Length: 190
Image (tube, rainbow, N blue to C red; front, side):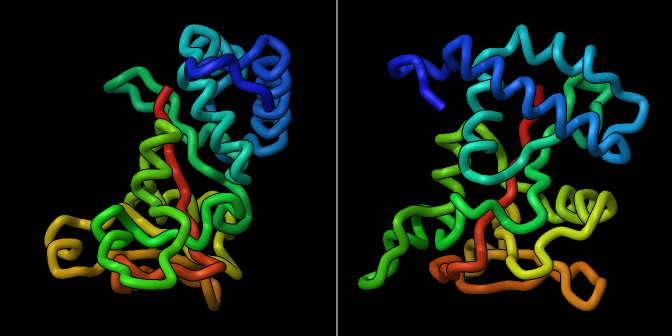
């Protein structure tokens, strides 16, 4: 989709295309957002063009974002990447910049934390990931980096999750590792 200059804003045509895609996905997956109407979500999206830009980034990289809840405390709708597998356009990334800088050779093209930040989204936490897995079966062939606690990261590690044998697993790896089947899933609050 075509972007307007350096602003984090979509053209009118791209905005309409994205909203149609999000509406279709919303209607098709009502189990993810019981008690929430598309009209409510649309009203919030229309007043937050930068959030639409981030949702478009999620869509373009294969995340298939969808509404998964509403936070009554902050009055925000919560979107997660709901693609069956870890978003294809966000794989083969190490965990963060420190991990990327530590690799002497065979560096990946980027890192998950910086890509998420550039997109204006957050990497799913372990709790977010478990909540997502209650809505369907995700990452049956891939895995996704998860927001890693500082004490684990300080020791050089990072965590990721997947679903195998009909169970959700959380693992650890060196933060500098990267694999063709590991990406990251994001969340966005609007």
